[in-house]
Amino acid sequence: MRSPSARTRLVCFPHAGGAAGFFHDWAALTPPWLEVLSVQYPGRQDRLNDPCPATMEELTDAVAEALLQEAADGPPVALFGHSMGSAVAYEVAGRLEEAGAAPVRLVVSGRGRPRGPHELAARPAPDDGEILRRVRALDPAGAAVYDHPELRPVILPALRADFRMLAAHRPAPLRRLAVPVTACGGDRDPVCAVADLSSWSDVTSGDVEVRVFEGGHFYLTPRKADVLAFLSARLA
Image (cartoon, rainbow, N blue to C red; front, side, top):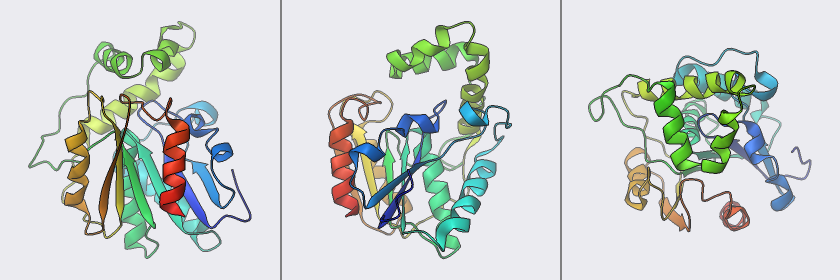
């Protein structure tokens, strides 16, 4: 939500298969000086007819360009990404930094830093069955929407495209930022152990802090008020 009195703009990036609506009520839970915006990836909700990006570079180039167009007239920007959104936010942060508009902070959630091709080879994207198995394991409530036969053909292509993009994403070289990073996660996340959060210190010369909340991969849903109180204090 746009706020004329904002001192900081928090730009949020959703998870694989996610949409901007995931953050729809964040503005109501944050102070008026913090403007919350969420990125709508192509291929979902109001951008359903836009083709999904084929690569991480295609997606992040477009997002960075849009943010740079507004940078001159807006408040300083912080970036928040959850799960896949962490990788997207990291790449966007690097592009903004190169353009002289570095974010004041990068907040990543539920994911360790990206891995280069020398660390982890690109791999084939999982098939639909494996994708849905993973999604149900991480977010049983949210995954229920894929069980609706009338909705599944509409929403599954974006999820499939996101997993394909992540399977291929092996940046070389890894960008080394100068941006401070806050890495958040759940203490029972099955795909991002608490120890993985500290890996973000490998890709920035800025300060890195780790904040652990109670919960699994989607800890930020039941702990939303706590997460937003923490972020508001950190960005104040």
